[in-house]
Amino acid sequence: MYDCIIIGGGISGITAAVYLKHANKKVLLIEKSALGGILNKISKIENYPGYKSVTGPDLAYNLYEQVKYNEIEVLESTVISIENQGNTNLVKLKDKELTCKYLILATGKEARKLNLENEDRLVGRGISYCALCDGPFFRNKEVAVIGAGDSALLEALYLSNICSHITIINKYSKFKCKETLLNQVLKKENITILYDSMTKSLNEENGLLKSITYMKDEKEEELQVSGAFVYIGSTPNIFDINLELDGNYIKVNEDMETSIERIYAIGDVIKKDIYQLTNAASEGMIAATNIIKRLNKE
Image 1: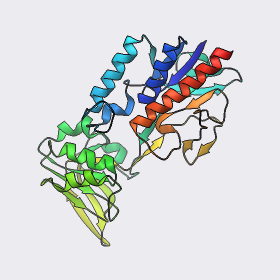
Image 2: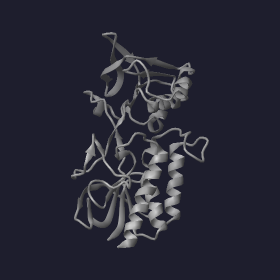
Image 3: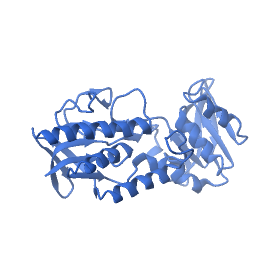
Image 4: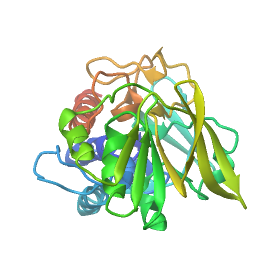
């Protein structure tokens, strides 16, 4: 029986784990891949306190070191389902079941797909959702970035130092981004922007991405590229339990507690106005301190 199990080892989940551990609570952190979560796929961070500039993997490694230093128990596994049983929660894994008094969902978001015919087949064969992970495979080649937000522009800038040319395909007439970021992109000679352009198909040859067909001014155009990096938003990872949602996101109160007592949610899986590392860490602290208060009264 754990005092608290945290599902998700991103910055919000790790922050909650550190606070709970410092309060001498029995806590378990479950992460299905690498600690740091989405940080491991971010090329550069320039708005996190304490750093002028830091790569996502470097910040993730610092978090890993903090988890290790605090001797926080970590389990690398995939959670199959969760079940609230009143005063306890049951967490089911592939090979075991765990129980806890309190549960924190820090499961984050998954990259949204274009939902085009060849997309799944071409993942790893020209289609990617992580420039930091796969950019080096396209060194000195022409690639496309599909998206209209900060992430698309940030990754285009990263790729501009690796690839010969980047074409950003934006289905809107403008970007939804920071002006300073757009100005950096506009100064890059090897980045071209296509506005009002809708991606229609991903064309392959010999099992690899060959080109992208897009619609612009009611005409079909074809762009020859070796790779395409998709940044069109993300979808929260939510378990199939009866939690109150706001859209696709989990609804929480000011204490980060969900509609089910003893289940909390933090980070990118919850409904909020701003999705940034700083407030994700803050949410981890808020959830943990409220759980600590309740545990101390029990």
